[in-house]
Image (cartoon, rainbow, N blue to C red; front, side, top):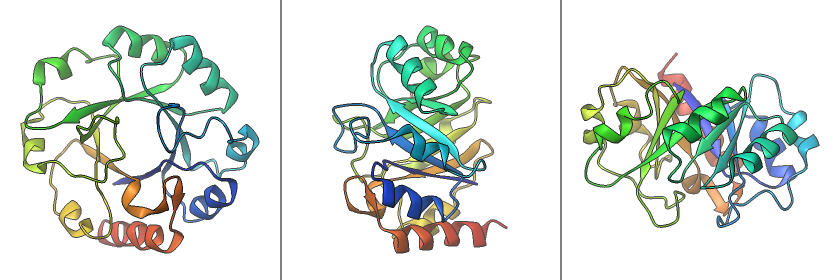
Length: 210
C-alpha cells in the first residue's frame, strides 16, 4: 500500500518528512488552500528529494497552461486535480507526460457514471470526503461505499486518515486500493507535519503490509 503525505510547504518540514521515506509527497498549488505552497516553495527543494519519492502537485480548477507550467517548474511526477476538471482536461494534462490523479468528493454515494466518464484519461482516482474547501477537512466518509467501486482504475483513499484510525485502514480490503493520502491529522498546524506522528503512521502501515 503506497503512502502519500500531502500538504507540505516549509523547507525544514519537507526535509524531515522526506527522510521518513513516504512513497509520495503532495504540494498544494491552489491559492485558496491554507496549505498553499506556491508562494514560498522553491523548486530546488523538491529536486533534492530522493528519486523514490514521487512529487505530486495539487490543483483546483486552474488553467491547464498554469498547471503545466508549475508541473514543469517543480519537476512534478503526478498532477492531482481536486476541482471540476472533466475528462478532456485530464487527458490534456496526461498527454503532457504527467500521471493524473482525479480527486472525487464522496458524501453519501459514489457516482458511477461520473467515474466512468474518466476512463482512459486518469491514472488514479482519489476518494476524499466532500467538503466546501476541496479536502483537508480531517473528516472521514463511510468507507463501506468503496465496495461500490468496480472500475479497473486504482484509487487512493483520503479524508481524515491518521493514527487514530490506522487499524481500520489496514482492515480495508479492495483489489483496487492503491494507496492512502494523509494530511491534516498528522499536522501541528496547516502545512507542518508532526514528524513523530507521521513516522508512527508510516511504520504501522508498512509493518502490517510487509
